[in-house]
Length: 258
Ligand code: 8X3
Image (tube, rainbow, N blue to C red; front, side, top):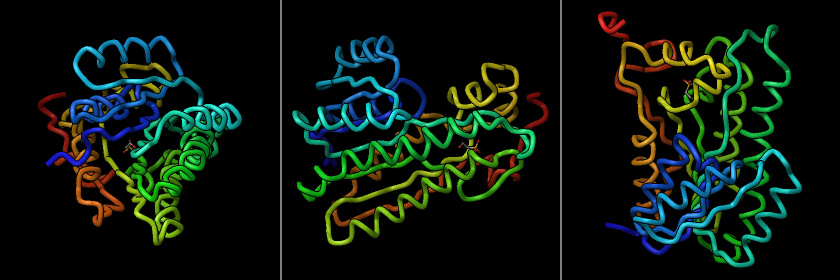
């Protein structure tokens, strides 16, 4: 069953990780994908790569942290595109420090991207979805937004906000056919930890040592499933964990692998 063929999707943060994997899978399903990112070069090379094999691929470059640019870029985009699917994948973790030792600029960057940026993009897209009375918004939350872990402070708070924004959107969209879903992954091996540890690759690698983490593709499969179910089904929350990780604290590492 492919209910997605011919639809149009905007994927934010599509130049890496979960965003890239879901953009690729959507394209494979025959979806017209608009790849969003900050880096024009990366977007163009991804577009060239995808376009060889898949449907129409467009790109749009801007920083979701910039309110004015985000609102005006999306306003322009909507003049020529009807968005059926919005995947809010842009976001990041920066730093892993105790509350009193954490860097305020790290906090601000996470709040600006994970919460404010997601709000700007969603607010700009939603009127068109409402007018068409169709659409599906996918937000990338985290186990971090469900269960606090040490040094997660503001990252956990931003992901809790993503979960609650999903819920408040769903209630405000009562009576429409627009669906809103939040994916809440545990450990996914992408560039996530490299960014969190500001390029310290050794520290980043250690996060995934001794167990099999999720891959970006594992998350993309779930997103495709959620998007593809019939229109009367709205999968509002999905917690997806590696089998080895039952929650942020209960993680089975095979010490022989160390
Ligand atoms: C990513 C998962 O456990 O590192 O959001 O917070 S975790």
